[in-house]
Length: 187
Image 1 (cartoon, rainbow, N blue to C red):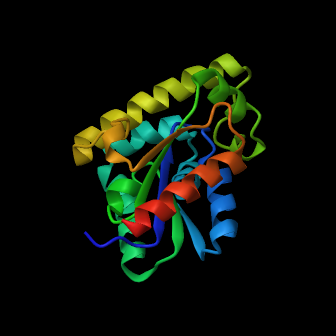
Image 2 (image 1 turned 90 degrees about the vertical axis):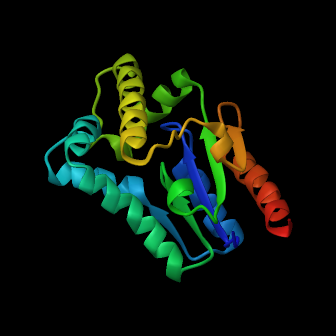
């Protein structure tokens, strides 16, 4: 398979995918970040739902999920030098450098709870509520991806690199990714 200058970043909720993607975009001088999650949140809001409820809705309307995932693959056919920030970016664009970002659940809940950008689609009164929602969404997504695509995003063999972001700064994570990405390109 021909490698492309594309990095697909998948990972746990609130593992730093968006922040790290922005750093990589700047550091690599790439053109864009393709964000499936942003589109998913927009659709949830348009349907008057929080993201967890929309996850359930999409189970009953798989054409929505299929269209979202297909869009990343279609974009990669005509573009190069970009970052994909998407749960199944690695699946949609197999010729990309595939990265999974892990994070401790308590840290994930804390990050998500304090993220002002999430409040319009994830508004919880406590960190514990946020944590319970993260666990619920994780299970819903895994089940949906298995039922639709027969893939498991939590199977680490799908990725070229796995990084635990729990105790690292976003810049440290980006630096690890760049180092391994350049090695991968040279192979």
